[in-house]
Image 1 (cartoon, helix red, strand yellow):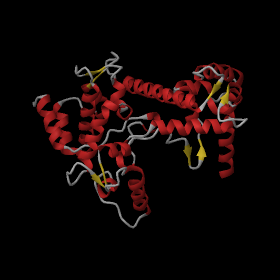
Image 2: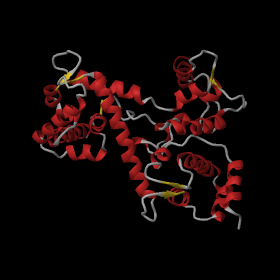
Image 3: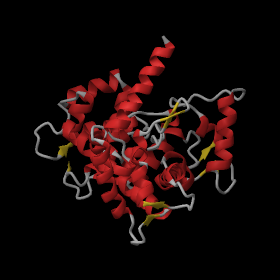
Image 4: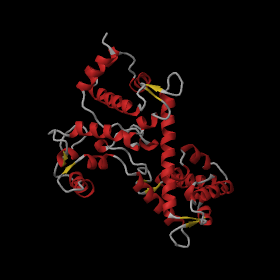
Length: 329
């Protein structure tokens, strides 16, 4: 039987890599077009319809808390939200301005990442010791338990083997103390590498290795627009035109018709700051009764259904869904 070291060297040489795609409950481990990571607000609007869950999670910083609030009476929701509003008001002027709200939402995003990561860790922690070995991750995610199974995957499932090697690189980068084990403090870097700057080099390396066909260290537009398998896009399609526009306007910052490392990462990694800005703007526009550009505690509490929801609003949303279903029948 081959040693682990030989097996891993074999895997490294056998595969090219694609970006790892752990993140958010909306798209955990789900690869989307081009292999970039799913933005946190990807499910804020579905089919043109506003989904309030994202607002509640952005305020509470917890899926579990958001679910709990859905079953609270309105008065209890208002009471708890008032206490949160006081904490949001960092400068103590009895208002929550946009900057304070953005910072609060960014804090919530970090808490959501932690909650998501701990859920994933629990699912992979075979011996329930609160930490993850590489063997535990591979067994839980890929069903691989020994070296012979890895060799069989080399023959039977090269795409899955490619994903396995991606994970191995990310696991090693997330293992900050180099002991071969991911502690609770290290695991979020593995499960959500897009959220941690020290993981971005691996994300970039995997993307460039997968897409940079001419090996010049940059991505030109054809490499950028190719699908996950490297097949070229059809120039006559609307998709091609839209991606060309994005490439030029959103990512090719220096206008040299290719993406360097900074620009590739700009493409691959969601901008949480921008997402938080947009969410803060949405919450203020929805709740700012006197239109002064900031929120009083009363305005926040009066719009508790926007910020946290409750038993009453949960009932209302369910009623609306039932009505829509009846209409369709």
